[in-house]
Length: 407
Image 1 (tube, rainbow, N blue to C red):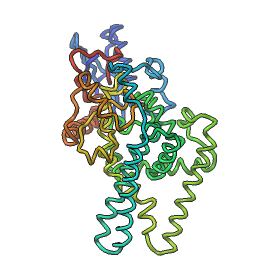
Image 2 (image 1 turned 30 degrees about the vertical axis):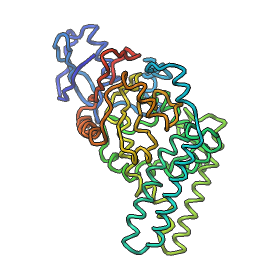
Image 3 (image 1 turned 180 degrees about the horizontal axis):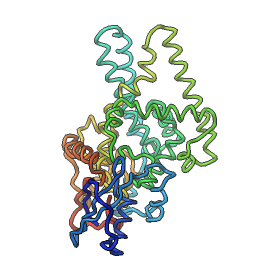
Image 4 (image 1 turned 180 degrees about the vertical axis):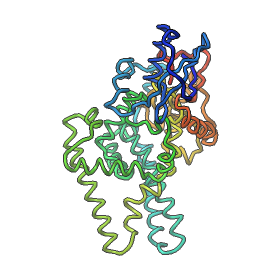
């Protein structure tokens, strides 16, 4: 159902011009696709007849308890069946094999990078040499921890379950995300990826808040939101959205962990005050802010600017080729279409999975530069035209599982 919007003020439409088909289309657009920051009047241009029909534009509700939540359920988008590329069961079973060795190796290197850069930062504190040391420490702590958090959350990094859980708790603290609510939030993200009203992890809602995107490079807005939730959890309360996905039996863990996080941060702040130095905070707390920029650069490539409400990960995820250093820091999450399509495949096998599926995939991006040449113009355009999205080109033989038009 292709159409365009022209945001201009128009007189009330003549009801005689609205056929039943037009009425159905206008209702659908109004509820699902006609979004502007403050609402207003738009024009629906009928592709078949060329009629220009004025309609009311309303903003989409990205909360998990609002209008679009009901609409997603009514349209069959909640807990729906998604498209999956064909791959033999035997080959998929081979790729899904979990192993401890790769993750132990990569995690030891990761901790070594933290130890070396942190020690050098301590030894050079008070000189300009401390700056590059803490830049490295910050990126390893505040950015690379995100991918460790993600893979251990899925429990695919290690074969041994407790290793996944230990790394997940450590990484959750580093990225300032409470481990229990985010485990269930991310489960919903995979069940209903970029389904408005269902997915709690849509990073860039339409129309994009460019200031919020800019602040995310320093984790300011997200950390403030998480702190408010954390304090709320300390008093034994969840948000309305969290109540929709955190099981009742898990909620006591949420409250316990929140209190532990607050105690650790309070102790670090107390140490900084006692020592009359911000040095303790350079190791715990502040790296979540000054080191998060690379996490955002990687993370925005996942879904930003792509279609919403479509049951095909090839249309709402990106696969971006990266160099070996970036792939290590990102733990192969650049193969993001593949990860969403088969989330139980460990990170170290995603490159092989990509080779198996790429004939049925959109063309991968050659690197971050090519991805951002698409993302930045898309976000700028969505500020004025929230109905715009990047339409990924599928192979000519591919068929999406859903007949619903991407939005």
